[in-house]
Image 1: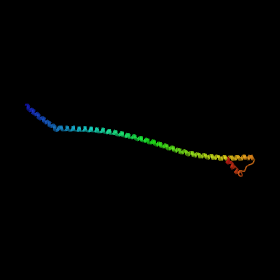
Image 2: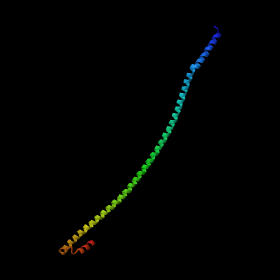
Image 3: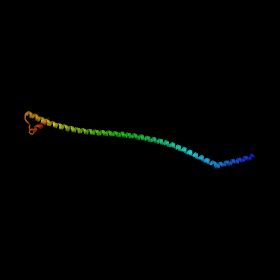
Image 4: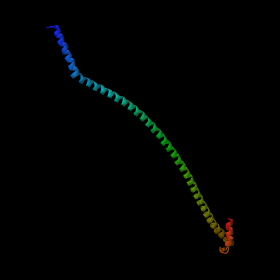
Length: 156
């Protein structure tokens, strides 16, 4: 065998092998590599988006938490203010009620004092009549001496 012919045959076979690989083997491998490269790039981009979305969500949740705390403080302050108003209203109502009860009690006391004075006058009159009757040893006619008794009652 001739070395030149073998070398020429191997070169032709190698060129056909390279052409066959470039035509039929290389495109699917390149396509698979491109698909894998695109999938990896999409995964990394999704990871970055997820990381960015997570940061946004964390900021938003912190903002919502701060707003909720501010709202809670406002609600508590409003509740305290309303409680103070209710207490003040209750104090005013209690004071008004105490004045009314005091006035009613004073009126009742005045009426009781007046009744007691009237009963006392009646008793004093009857005692005076009994005493005068014993002194004079006779019975006094209350109709005849009514003016005298009225004057006596007024003096007492």
